[in-house]
Image (tube, rainbow, N blue to C red):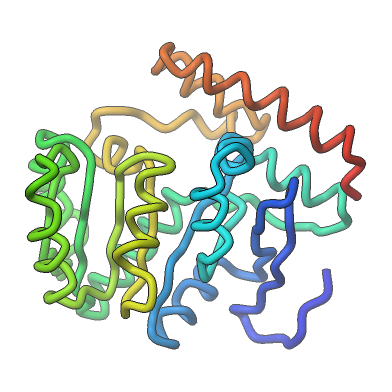
Length: 246
């Protein structure tokens, strides 16, 4: 893979089924470099989101305007490899946790938005113990009435956090961060179900399932209601092969 320079945060924008994704030398360095340049929006792309974006122009546009799109899913990594682009899968939950640790060590202001009231309450109590020095300037669960959001958004912007992690689900978290966070300082990152995992409500797949690239099966076992969404995975594979992306 050719990069324009040799700095750790080098990246090159590629496309999978027309959806942009960045081939990064080091996703952590890319994210920290983005913060150093004033901030921006981070999207974590997997096969399911790719197929959703192809059917949802608003999500497609939100991904396209993001400053950093990392290859979160094994399907995206596989699709890139067919184009001769070799990257390592970069789970969003791991990057988000790394950024929280960095935030705690460097006095960043952190905001957490989304998930259920119980999950957010748990994180308010446990994260500062796990990450000494973590400065949580705002923690807001995602089950707010519609009329509450404008005030919360104004409060969030007034706090000028360095890191905003958003667990509102796809595509809501991407669309919300595009609306609120575009052109605003700080790193804005959608994290899906990461808050649930950190709060102990859900578990990540065992590492051996990750090695065999079947983490999707573990998620389906935990959440059987996802089965319809999982139908997008074989469709993704078929589209990549039939389009001959190489």
